[in-house]
Amino acid sequence: MTPAARHAEPIWRAALDAVDPYRAVRREASLDGEALRVGGASLDLAGRRILVVGGGKAGVPMTEAAVDLLGRRIAGGLVITKRGHGEGRGAVGPVAIRLGGHPLPDAEGALSAAELAALAAGATTDDLVLVLLSGGGSSLLALPEDGLSLDDLRKASDALIRGGADIGRLNAMRKHLTRLSGGRLARLAAPAQVVSLILSDVVGDPLDAIAELGLEAAMPAPVLGRLRRGAAGGIEETPKPGDPMFDRVINRVVAGNRTAVEAAAEKARALGFDTAIVSINLRGEARERGRELAALGFDTAKGKGAVRPPACLVFGGETTVTVRGQGSGGRNQELALAAALELEARGAARTTVIALSTDGQDGPTDAAGAAVDGSTCGTIRSAGVDPRAALDDNDSHRALGAGGALIRTGPTRTNVADLALVLVL
Image (tube, rainbow, N blue to C red):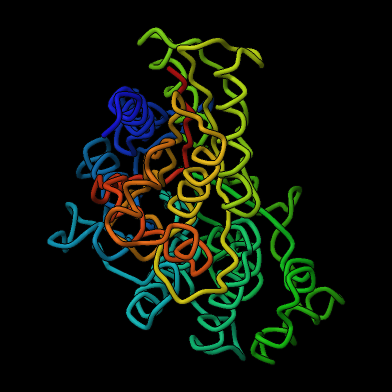
């Protein structure tokens, strides 16, 4: 591990601490006697039945926070989380914990989503439904609409992921193809009072994404048909702002990517780095962004830009990978490997680039991301791996593992997209 990478660890750990789901829920929601305070609202709980439902990678700690806050007031519930994030927890108090597939929905998750839908639909005017949503929820709550199969959803999701669609586009497509997304869960629970506590939130346009990425041929015919009928007004749309249904709905984002980015910047300043938040909208092809971050670090080392060494540039967002090779990796590892090649080419000896997924799992690997500098590619070659060929084959995990550059955190039980740091000593 390089000196800069050692400096980086307390910075990214501070970011993860700031988006701890348990603490985020407890910051946002509190009890005042028999009233639940959420944001600026106060809801009388006297005589109310409370149900807790939701989905996402942070499902277990968010549920723990809700149960610790509301205790015996909770009559029951069901929350679905990703495998690896909730094993051994069949329930938290009266709330059942189920497991499902991510990033591709699976049969177990769909069955649990159907059970959750039935629970929400049974709510009455006197009930309060507390909805806990976090990253991964659109896959874990993927209950297909009529006329669509789970296989249709899986194929459509896989095509978008492999085609380089960002999470906003993926979630937007699922919003139109599933029964619980895009406000439909709140509609099911009506006329109950609904309070949603959200760890992340993204939007997009699914038809535009499919067309722009040239993925029509990869889409199941029922999926394209439904999206086109929806665009033409032939299918009931998702609820929109102004719908009377939302008069009894409170949505609160309890933490997000900006929270993590600002905490990272605060920690970097405390460690003595001249620090700048460059972007909280880091998007696009991971390898292109990796080269750009490396170039920014190189320029900063030369005295160009808004900060001076020792410096820390902070980025938040979520890049994408267009899969063309046969290797294994994730968007953060691909970004890091591309950055390592650029740092080597520029002879950037003072710059380290760190990229990681806040959920602790970057792609289908056991790593959260990686920390690289100008010497990383040489170390990879010494281990018998060609870093350029690995990047061409989307095989960043193997290459960075050979270079000792991987960051492994294990499941963090949170998810607010990605964090990237450029450190210049």
